[in-house]
Image (cartoon, rainbow, N blue to C red; front, side, top):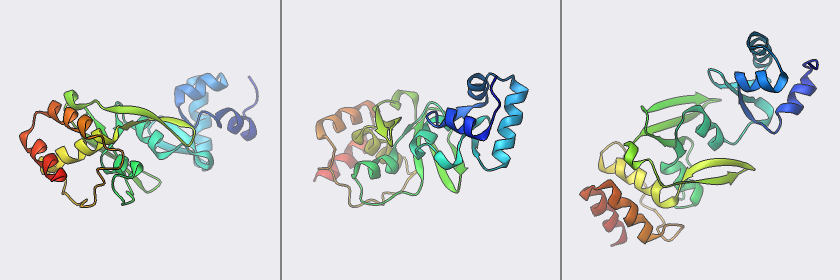
Length: 198
C-alpha cells in the first residue's frame, strides 16, 4: 500500500468527487478502521466535507450540487422549482435543491445550502432522465414532470402557486405534459394545467 500523502489522496479522488467510507477503503486498500481514521483526519483538516454520515466529497473540488442531491438520499431526482429554473421554465433562481423521492420527506443542510426531498407516491416516481452537469451524470425530472411535481403539490396545498411567469413555450411539450398528468388521475391538477393554457 502506498503512503497516504495528501497529493496521492487528492489525485486518486479528483475524478470520483463523492465517495463512501467503503469506497475509500477499496481505493486505498485499507481496512475499515484505517479508512475511518484517515477520513476523520482529512475532514478535520477541511480537505473533505461530510455530505451525510459515511458520504464525503473533496471540499476544494466538490461535485455539482445536483449530484450531491442524488447521492445523499436515494432514490431521488432533482425536480420542482429547482429543475424548472435549470430549464429556464421559470426565471427565478432557486437557492435550494429540491428533489422528489418515494421515501419520507427529508431536509439536509450542507455548506449552508438546503437539500430538500418531497415525498410522492411510488406510482408518480417517473419522468426523470440523466443529464450531464459540469461533466457529471445526474438524475433530473424532465421539464414536464418537474412542472407536474410542483403543480401537484400546489393542488395538495403543500406549496403556494408563486410562479406567475411560467414559460410554457420553454422546453414544455404540451402533449407529454397532459399524458403525464393523466397518470396522476387528479381532476384538480388537470383543471389547473388547462387554466395555464387559457
